[in-house]
Length: 441
Image 1 (cartoon, rainbow, N blue to C red):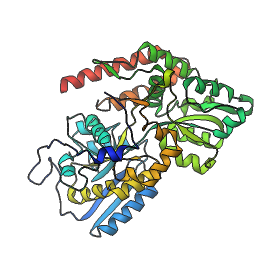
Image 2 (cartoon, helix red, strand yellow):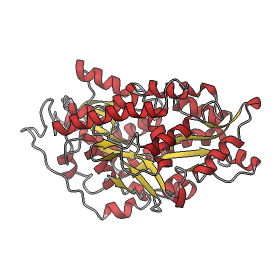
Image 3 (cartoon, rainbow, N blue to C red):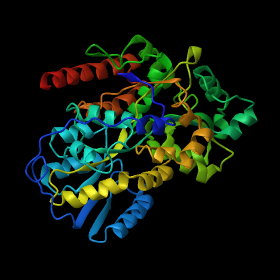
């Protein structure tokens, strides 16, 4: 499915659109099986799926919640983003899941397939969140869950791929902003001075590399669908050519150490060194602001292709999940409702520089200011961006896009595997996973 996603207009659009949610069967206590509602008071445990980075804002929201609900105590557990899926998988297999946890659509299907999460559609429709969650995000959660119209998390935020660039370095070199792919490649070359440890770009070769590579591939090829029937377009000739050009940047205009870099290392070297451009997302805005100040960097959407056409792959929707095993679902749901309400959702997303799921929060002054000052926000409001929906609904998506192919992508960077071999391998895995999913449906 191809969509355009106008986030700045999300408040006006979604406030006028009531959510239509398919009710799911529940047990006598209002749950779908396992755990219990409890008394709606007492203690609950919350796992933050980006612990450390988002700890301060979550502690503030928790303090606000406990003040409003003095009979509920929230135990906060920060889980680093790189460890969260394995932590969940271990707890699903051996016990010890929290009552509430941060859940991304990138691994939602895997958790739903293991019946770890409570369906929340009825709770949303019958409570304070009815009608105030962005339709595009609720739809993304439904699709990612892989079980029709039911929702297995409450969306809280969306992100957007962003090309950050050093305005000071561009100005010194007499270069225009990299708004097109031709300008991007030209700038990457002209800003590179290896003898002085200056590079035009930093490429993501370590953890999280596949999503970035897909974004760049589809952005250059202009292909707007991930599937053609039940066959993926990942290894289409246009994508192969785009990936070949992209990996050709490695060591030519990027640091050699990039082959092992995750986003933390990339962001750090962009903020502290002489690197012209970085592909990440809106979430690193605060890091750049702190290190560089307002005047030395800017954010742009994916560069545009011929005719101004811009294509990006979908970013995961973050949310909060209610765990089936919880013995205090009543209190846990109160916390989820509070965290997804206008004030808390706005506070969290302003801190993270992301797009609020709560449509009332999406109308707040800070997001309008961000949209004016950041082209990555603006690109989602002007109709110029087409989103290629990644198949988060496949239970095997995360293993295919991470475990199976991140090491293979490093081989491509190192010249040990061709771009075509890499994409053909991934396509075979995706087609097989899609066929299995179709059969299960």
